[in-house]
Length: 313
Image 1 (cartoon, rainbow, N blue to C red):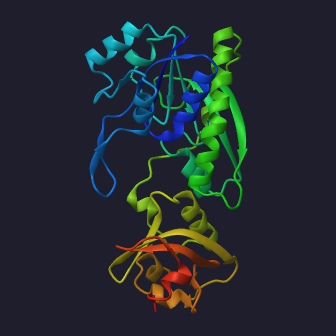
Image 2: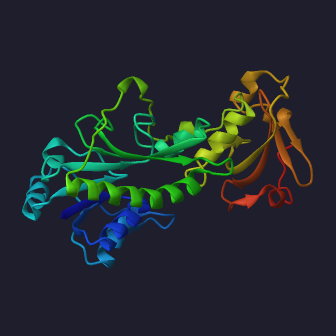
Image 3: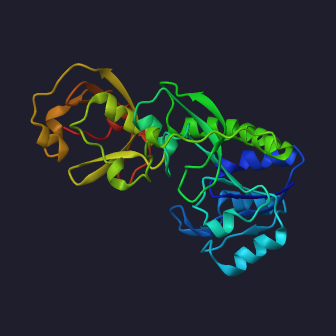
């Protein structure tokens, strides 16, 4: 079976490795164009492209997925199957090329969390379980018939980074099983119930901004869902502080400071409890302990280290 794999981050690498291990032919890899990354703004390829180069796999990095030359190259491969994982939306003229169509590995239990950031939103919304889904691509994003699903527990200590790592390896196994079923023609498709759909939109800067007028539990889940990247943050005295780890100390204590002062971070200091080793914030409901943070222009540190040279009071 000739497979073309399409992805950008390292999420798909274990899947490609597992497919190769099982004897499947990865005829090509499609990914995003090289771009400036990191503080040095060095132009580098995507993780998937680096993997493809290392394994001597043909790779394409089209600016537009509707580029005629790119589509012609895909036709020349004469593929049996396209697989996407953490990639762009494929136009119909692309996803209909292969003999068996195109499938996607998605980081949620569809139809829940359709969109670009399903792993993050499951944590932000306080879910205790999520999962992975393989499904057929259709015109509307994340709406195709389901092939397989696997449930994954979200542990209390999980953040985006730890859950992402677990899911990319579990997803590899699920994807191989899916391809085996497609090859054998032994699939029972499940139509998605659109009435149960929930959104998982792209993470923006404003989503990352901590709104202190929310409860300690809500802010804690926001921090977990955005750690280690891009990270939740708050502004204080003109500086940005990223927050990577927190702990809910209590869930009932209510602050008597007006809500508006929290939303705008004007009187945040009135909600701060600071000792030599601890930094806590009284939210609208509950108290939140800040455990790891990053002051603007500095490296990520523990709160204890932060308090040796800084103060928010």
